[in-house]
Length: 204
Image (cartoon, rainbow, N blue to C red; front, side, top):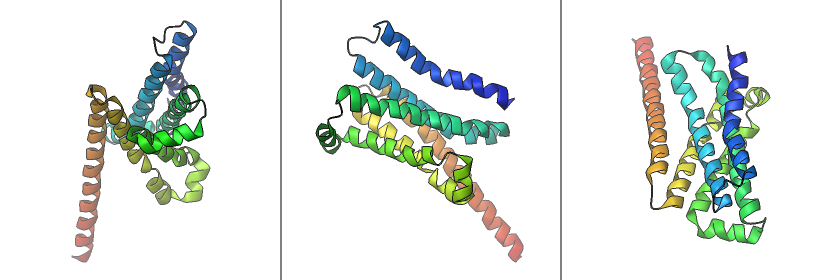
């Protein structure tokens, strides 16, 4: 099933970029094309980060264990759209002016949060291969890939600090992330309780 589903989902993940390119070719990006591209790629980055984080809970709740095979693809698409988001800022907005970008990072806190979110995604993308899992070992790899929660949190903060006034959309992302973090916390407490019970049984 996964073999046939993956190509379809891959094309679906590219659809936002295709729509953006189509709009660009037809001069339909509005009065501020750079802002439109920035917002669209940023939304896609956060969306794919949250989809990636949703895979494990969904897999466990539905017992559809094949879903885990989609997590890496969704994570890499988050990094892909994050790279496009960053390049829009670096290339189209700042024209590779390093001094201006460094000043931005230092003075504008939403830029700092956004850069942090992207920086945290880099090691995740670089270690997304099966070779990396074998090299790092399962536990170390899993520990490293928990950075995705921090990346998503920094991304949500970046969005909240960016918009300032109309917080509806960034707060929707924050709510979804909050639910996923709550699930993670409950699952961790459940595992700890099970481990304690196991120790008590073995000691008894």
